[in-house]
Image 1 (cartoon, rainbow, N blue to C red):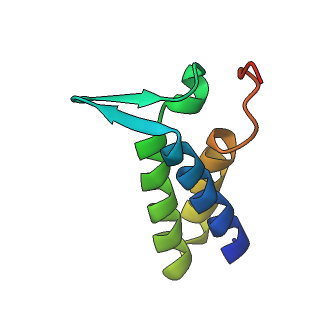
Image 2: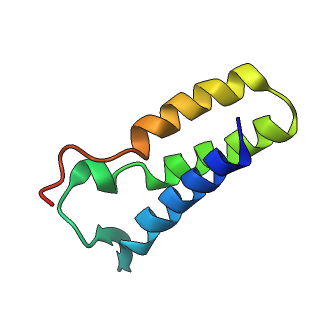
Length: 81
């Protein structure tokens, strides 16, 4: 696992958060794609745990988290654009 991957996933979280607005007590996104909008907090938690695993040489755990993140931070096939 490399720092470049970690940076890629951090950018993924940032891009998802930039599309987020809070209205009252609910979250609103600037697009209509549920696949892109869901799990932003879960993705952030995974990125934090990936960094922890990398820092503590937990290779197998880091690989598992990497697989989860690659599915959630890849190109969305459901988006209209």
